[in-house]
Image (tube, rainbow, N blue to C red; front, top):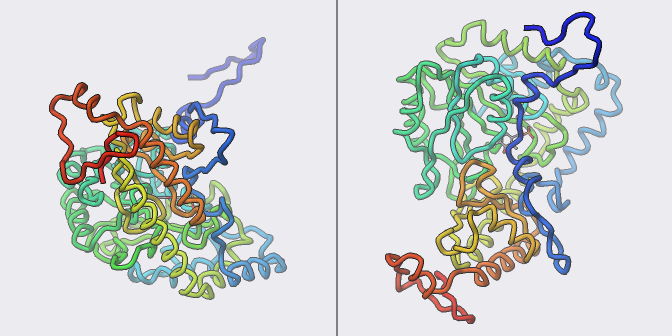
Length: 442
Ligand SMILES: *Cc1c(COP(=O)(O)O)cnc(C)c1O
């Protein structure tokens, strides 16, 4: 159907279907919040998933040096093949050796991991098909898929089992139109890290139903002490996997826009078509920026392990700090993460009856305490909020104290609670009366 006829006598320019159906849920919700911070308190944004915001976390000297050198080379200024320079893809293949047997031919360089995800989805899903995504999970999947007419279906994660996949729900969501299952490990926003056994259970479902997997491993290796990261691809016998990763989170350079797809396909199920499809789709942007491509071999080779260890240790300590502070805040239940850089916190809305939902809770938290947490609705997961753990320690501590104060000031009194819900009993051993006569759970 043509929208304009020749000889039209007036202007009629509309945005395309793709443009109109592309939405960023987080931006939409955040922009519509009534967020006027308390002018007497400095605003602390625990909402932005960008580790560079506060300037306290920086890439190591070797990484900056590699880019400095790249700027000087004339070869860093020209076009590369759409899927990336061979040396850069070779470097990613070596860096990804923990994922299994990877060659440069298995690597497609992309403009950030989001672009890797876009290519992965668009190479295996057509309009009318669906892709299964964890809830709560990273929302870029919805942003990318819906404009393309690909349906996003959610499978449940279990907050009481450290956000493991509800396997029964996952399998129930699969239908004849399911083109892929997305597995995010370690997870944004949950911070969960899946064990080998759990990954095998997920693979078993994919294998029995013949559904390929998109493994979002942008937080690969980003795990706290006593946890182990396992690349999903190492465990797969047959399920073809497109692993998406990049420099963004681990090297603390989101703005550099360097990501990649690694193709894992032991049984050659994708055959030539999917591989070539990816190479063709890469042509849509003529490949990612070559300044970083040329620096990539040095970045991946010379970044010392001690840099990664220090960043992860910092985040782990931040997680412990926030967990200890917020665990004692009445009406909240933080879920201790095992990796990545976020923490999910349950807001027990029944204990804050003055707020209709967690959206109102975070709004008032901004207007009274100038602390901004991302409401769970941004992940289509109400009654929770997400905080980022990458902010400086003193700021995180201050933010947690303010959140706790806010909770104490707004938690319903025990008498009121009984009126609202006659069945409500606070577990006696954890029940504490605060200074102001209100209850809190220790
Ligand atoms: C940040 C993030 C990405 C996107 O990374 P970019 O390289 O900035 O595009 C993808 N997946 C998850 C789970 C993320 O948290």
